[in-house]
Image 1 (tube, one colour):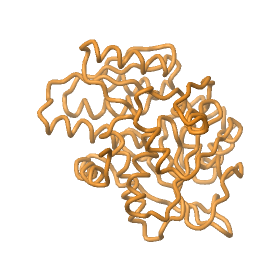
Image 2: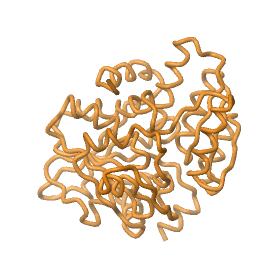
Image 3: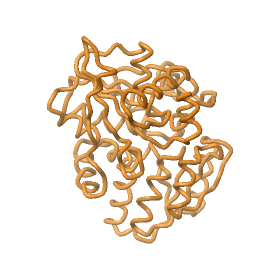
Length: 316
């Protein structure tokens, strides 16, 4: 049957005491005559990104089902690893995180501080392959950062909060990496607010959804470096998110590196909110004109785990 609204509600109950119901704050900077734009501040979560929702939902469910001694294995661009390390530590579960060597130090150091075992890899694609291979060989239980029902349902709790906003939303703009975030939000809003358009934003350096949907099948892309490091990498050949995105997402746009840099600097300067490159994707789509906002529009600011030197460089 796939992931249903009931799964998202169940996730919300599991994580209610462990995560924050994040603010949806009006942005005068991004709003205009035709649009009221709101920012969903997932930056204030315990690990400074929305990933904690899916991590806690998955670990809570494992604990409830009696899998208290399992070793967890994952691949991560950084935020999922940090969130899962935080959740695993709270439930005394060992964790192995396969991660790209060039992931931001802000993310790598936070994972290490949480006590997880780090396995550096050449890039995210290799990290995902190695994590799955390690788990399949008996190393532990693999939890995908995006293609796992509990992770997706946890991300979907953002959709519940957006649907409860007093002003009906005409559109929600969501950054896309592996597609777990937009899948979860889309599942919730399709059921609760079917008139809300779901718009995804990929980066030019890595846009597997745009290319795969155009081709009618999963395709491999050449991944380049990006300020939005959390959005780069190819899709797991076994991913469940491509079909979900095909069914529930109304539009996907692609932004480039200049768009991201201008948007990140704009959010920090005008909103006084620190964000990472992936979180700048939504604002970048508006600032660059890739999306013309109309009505009440929410943008998910997905995380704030940015290296200080990167932030300083962008602001310069």
